[in-house]
Image 1 (tube, rainbow, N blue to C red):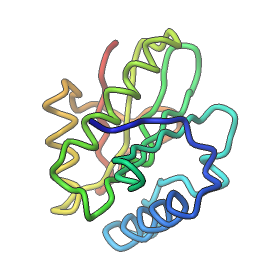
Image 2: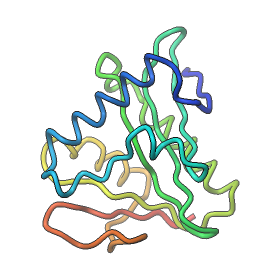
Image 3: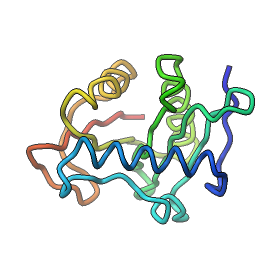
Image 4: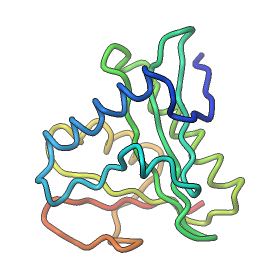
Length: 152
């Protein structure tokens, strides 16, 4: 359905979607609780970014950040607004889960916010088996963040 590829983040469409993602995170989160990775963060050697394509159209991005040998984090999940409710995020999430398993990760985690803007993503993660839990990898509990985990 969608073609997934490891992305080097050099393409204009991918950079534009990443900028849109960061803008959305800042618009829907208190400034002190925006934990989205910018371009520099996504280019780190422990981060892999996938882009999803429908022909020549970029439909989404998602990333896996390895924390240590046993734990990794889902990062930068964003569906292009022209392609919502087509299953883009679910396909990217499965790729991220598969890559984490292949790397020997035992627990996949994520941090996200609260409010209407986050509910569709939270529903998808919970449908896939992620459960609520505590902070991880240096995050601290606060009134805005939610932490979800999937044992692999």
